[in-house]
Length: 265
Image (cartoon, rainbow, N blue to C red; front, side, top):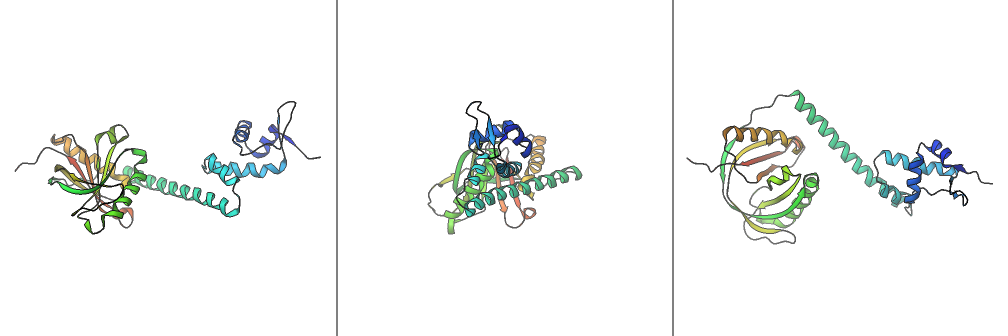
């Protein structure tokens, strides 16, 4: 006669709460070996403890339940390992981001703010190859990567300058807004999902940010303080120009342009 355990005993065996076990049953992740027809009580076999332990460990690693289901239902070892490998890559990426945030915070706490050099510059109108969208700030990293990839795939020999982005005010104030990624061009490159347009001239207070994109807020703060202190700011999008994106993050160089009153001699 097969040994069957009550949901309470199985909960103690697996460190999974009764609530979690019921939820996993409803999702089809961990189906009881039997359900008592008279009482509706869930009964589990001891051999199911291993599956429960696997689920708990992957949940501890933050794997979404739909991916846990896909992993458990994989038809073979290769398919199962593909699901696991994809999740581990995301965990590693999140760990890298956490380490970068810790390093940035330590630097912020330990170092005094350095003075910045600001140049007020009239930027002429330019023809650009562009990708625009209304995006959430939390989704911006993924969107940048896709937008720049699309631009790079089309521009070819028409490139006339470094990549850039325009960020409208709502992107900062509402956590979502219009963003335009672009590359200055000469000629008329054509490609699917991109557009050729004229970027208007602008008067900007410009400074150079050295280092990771994750620390751009410090440069924004210093530049905003500069502009506010001189009462020269005007409405308009912030402009970032990515002068250096190769190498490690410490090698990155990004110009930040804040819209200001027209420059006069």
